[in-house]
Length: 323
Ligand code: TXA
Ligand code: MG
Image (cartoon, rainbow, N blue to C red):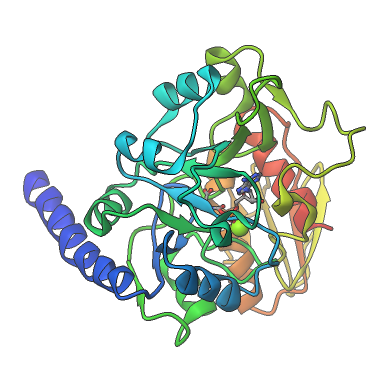
């Protein structure tokens, strides 16, 4: 019975969301599912809790956090002004896998923005995340719920693997729908076109259809200053060596793995993942990296995809994972 299934899901979201929100109110940090990847959240106004996030993740101290909202009304609380472009993107893509960089409200502590006068804001679409954020009632500062440098966590067990014993609560959800992080667009400066700082689950094509003057950091990369602090660090790396190739390898050793969208084999092994399309590839890639590490795989071959749509965000992750 479909109705009963949905009821149980939303009741569970409420019960566990309430439990998670109690920890937030006590100044603790909790992990929660979103449609992109799992997040590790703290009350944005609790500077001790925010420092704990940096500590448990071993996160570089200059890398700011995204603020998560459940209601558009909260925008006035965290942003000082919104450019017209920001308002257009918010109208079309909130709630969803888009983060917008805006000028920060003075009441948001520097501990969350790491001294910048801007802040990233995002409103997840995920039901459990939404419930949790609503129940806490405060904006939640949250990076991805993984040890810095390792693949983002897209499954409950991946969060558990990274943070067991280090955080008091993990709000359980299914495997993240998109599997890669939100797209980050800087809309903080009225004199600069909105700029994609990180490609992600909303594609550049989808953004351009709504806001045609959007640009990508790659275009003005002669400007060496890093506008998104997070982009300069090593990222997404499994313990195994990652090798990118246009076609599947001719054969695989037992300690090697492959993920991609085409491969012909009669074997079904946990170390071979053939996805139906690029969307499914993105959905699975971080979980696959973590499975390979648990099986002591030494080399993961990843098939290169065309850098269009979600493929662009996927390629950005794969290139970084391959170092
Ligand atoms: O999908 C996501 O965005 C997930 C979920 C949990 O919402 N979160 C996430 O957070 O991926 P994190 O911390 O792993 O990545 C945030 C990125 C970093 O690259 C950071 O440098 C950038 O956003 N960022 C945050 N605030 C910024 C700011 N004020 N200016 C420029 N870049 C900023
Ligand atoms: Mg991250």
